[in-house]
Structures are given as C-alpha cells and as structure tokens.
Image 1 (tube, one colour):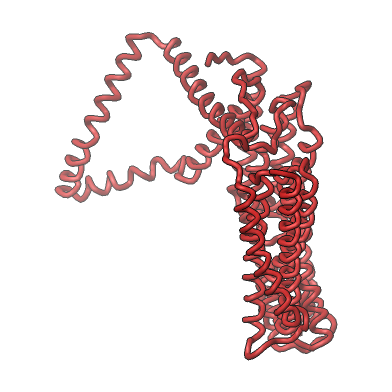
Image 2: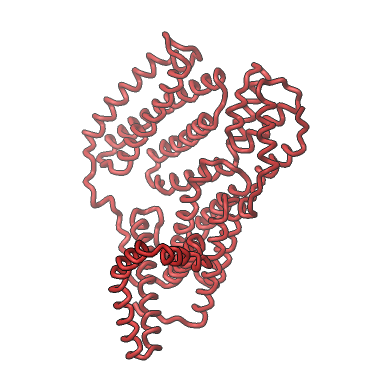
Length: 487
C-alpha cells in the first residue's frame, strides 16, 4: 500500500488533530454532558468537509442512523440516566463506525446481509494497516532527512543508554545507602520533571491515538475498495431443515402451549393470585415467561423461517399455520406477563427496571407482529426490520427519559394510596429529585422528605462542575433546590 501525503491530506491531518483535542476535552475533563454532542457536531463537520462531493450510498437509512447518533449524543445533555450514560459510551462509537462504513460502501451492497459484517471489519483492518503504513512513511522521511553516519551514532548512543540503565540502578542504590546527603539530592530529582506530569502525558497520548484513529479510518473509507467481496446468499451454505422434522417439532410444542394457555387462562387474566404466591413471586414468574417467549419461541420461528425447506405447497402452508399458532401462543404469555407486572406495580410502586421491562414487552409485540407477517410474506427481511426497530426503540427509551414516567406513576399512586418511596425517588436521576420537590411544594407531610431535600440542597450549593458536564436536567434540579424554602 503506497501512501503519499499531499497538501489536502496535511490539512485534514491537522483537522483530525483538532478533533483529537476536542475528544480529550470532551471525555476526560469530568462527567460527560453537553460535551458529547459538541464532539459529534465537530466530528461530522470534519467528515462532511472531507467528503464533499463523495457519492454516498444507502442515504435514506444512513440519515436514520445519523439522526439516532445525534439524539443519543444529545441525551447526555438532556437526561441524566446512569444506565444509558454507560451504555451509550459504547453504543454511539459503534453506530458512528457503522454509519461511516455504510454510506461509503458500494451502492449495490446490502447492509442487511451477513457479508456486510465481514466488509465492516475489513475496513477497520484496513485502517489499522494504514496506521502502520503512515508510521513507516514518517519513519522513512525522518531517516531520509538525517545523515546516515549521525543516525548510526544515535543508535549506538541509545544502545549504550539501555546497557547502562541496570548498572546505574545498582550503583545508585549502593551510593544512596552509603551517603544520606547524596540520597536527598537524588530524591529531589523527580521534582525537576513535574513540568509534564503523568496525567498530562496520558492526555497527550490519548490525543495522538484519537487523531491517528480518526485520520486513518476516514482516509481508508475515502478510498474505493479494490477487492470485490462476493455477496452470495449465505443460506445456500447451510443444509435446509427437513420439513417433516420441523412440522413434528412445531406440532408438539404448539400442543403444549395450547394446553398451557387453556388451563391457565383464568390464572393469566383474573388479576388475582393463586395459592400462596406472593406478588414478588407472581411478577418473577411473569418475567421468566417473557424470557422464555423471547429466547425460545422467537428463536424457533426465526430458525424455521430462515432455514426451513419450503417443500410442497401443502407442507409449506401447514408449517406457516404452526408458526402462526406459535406466535399467537407467545402473544398470550406475553400479555400474561404484562398484566402480572402491572399488578405488582400497583402493589409495590413503579421503578425504572419495571418500566423498562414494560417498554421491552411493547417492543416484543412489534417484533412478533412483524414476524407473523413475515411467515406469510416471504420476501420481507427479518434482519433489516429487526435492526431498524431495535435502533429506534433504543434511541426512544434513551431520549424519552423513563425516569420521568417512573416519577409520574409514583406520584399518581401517591395521590390514590398515600404511599410513596421517597428514598427510591431520591436514588433516581435528577428527575426523581424534581418529583420530591413537587411533593414538598404541595405541602405533603411525608416522613424524611425534608431531610432528603436538605441534603440535596447542600450538594447543589457546593457542587461545581466543568462546562463539559453541563446537563439540562441537572441544572433545572439544582436551580429549583437553591430556590426551595426548607423549614
């Protein structure tokens, strides 16, 4: 791979260096807030500047992925949920790389095919190789600008230094033991080098790594890949499932599900508990049924739809019927789990985890509906839809702020039952504290509420965060706490 750095490439390298500095300022100066959005704006500004006039492919889907990236990065500014705070540190870079490879890939390339994963990793491998080529190119340039005799002298000096280090370590240790004054002098040497401390050195290293990564990846994607990857239907490499075996398995499973649904129908939808089950046991059983539905039924359906042998028209229709019964049975159990969890929430209140599980159940309903359509309309793509709906779902629950729903439902429950867990609301993001402030301003005499708000008010008055950590929800909460008149 031959590499020549022109004037335009040199300017682009300088812009990547600035991006590396922005990345260090955004992610290593405190808790991430508005800085993530600022970095994404800067990154894509440089990207589109470099790729002016480039014939992008898959633009409609690319815009969807790009919108999700921007919304997820904006969530660091809008919300303050620690679960998504940690997840998005990994999710957003992954989506950015996926988006860049997607829009620069050949127009005929189908991203929903397994071969696209190989293509993506091949592009990342090319970026790593480009790093090595650039390093060799720079090394060759340095070597060419230095006299060969002087270069040989410096090599010998370096060898001498390496040999001297272990000898000096032993000798210095003995001399320091022999003379305390000498030990004091040598002991003060580290203070001479505090101009560049360890933290600053690490930051510089990060800037250089970020600069090299961004520069090499974007340079590689700008080049057309000469190697043509065959986009063959990978299903031909797998042996088709025998239709008789498939039907036998589906019939047996469906018999069990139908009997289970009929026998337990009253148990599912009566809204009451059977036997000596507690609410906690009731909800956990519903959750495990949800897990069972997700991992078993959906997996079976996908495998049969993807790898099943169509066979004769009669066998094909019967297989589709069995898969339909499997999906509908899964829907019944999913409804049961949903109702059980609702009953549990009525008794014990709403938490972030329970609301998240509720949203996941709704997401599964959409998945099952599409899968049911796919059973009868074969030309539809499961991977295509699953990826898009998962991306939209994840972005939605991140931006919506589920904590706000948790607070709202707990406030409604308090109005009806007089019960509220102030300690749990306090453990949530600043949204939970806003809910506690609303309770206090309404004149609710709730035990320990004032004590909790006093502690929060002290934290708000003493807290000082850098601009990188600016978060709209946190600032709203701090502003309300400072104005709150606590008795």
